Length: 112
Length: 113
Image (cartoon, rainbow over the protein chains, first blue to last red):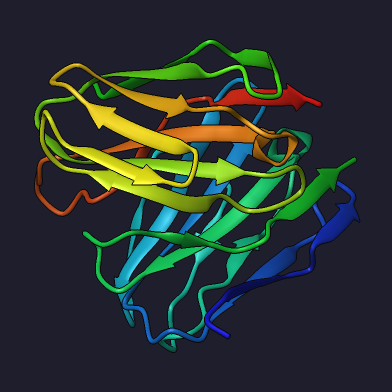
């Protein structure tokens, strides 16, 4: 089944404790992206990747890092999480940058 | 700056009561407008892409239309299973390497039996 998977689905952590949210897609998509979703603000793009080893900032990149060493994986790294990063995070992928994006199931992160 | 505004924020409908959701946008040039459905606790699920004014797409009880300034998502004779949050997103015309989608905040639709 074609899908985007994220792990973990739920995470509660404390300020400053480094964490990684994984994202994997099995559709051989070139383009991958991370979004955060906050009430009343809609989905906002954090980082995106056009292909392996090619990443760039979205609208709200501060406090986040990404890497794209393999085509299928696009992990999101929070090196020193803060409470304002409490949010619902989605990974998405598409065949190319201009095609329809397909979303993962989401990761709900709470930073205490 | 690109702006996407969805209205209303919430819509409560009786089963069978047709209605429309609005997505108005301000972009330098439109590459595509996307509609997604999002159920609680799940990721957005793709519904439609519209590319040019006058275009229409249909899927079951949903019909999306596009003008130069806005898009409408019409729900005809809705059923309780149509309850969800509907998201609109726009992709502006290419500028440098920016292919990002700009999303609206969504309209939450509740259909009562």
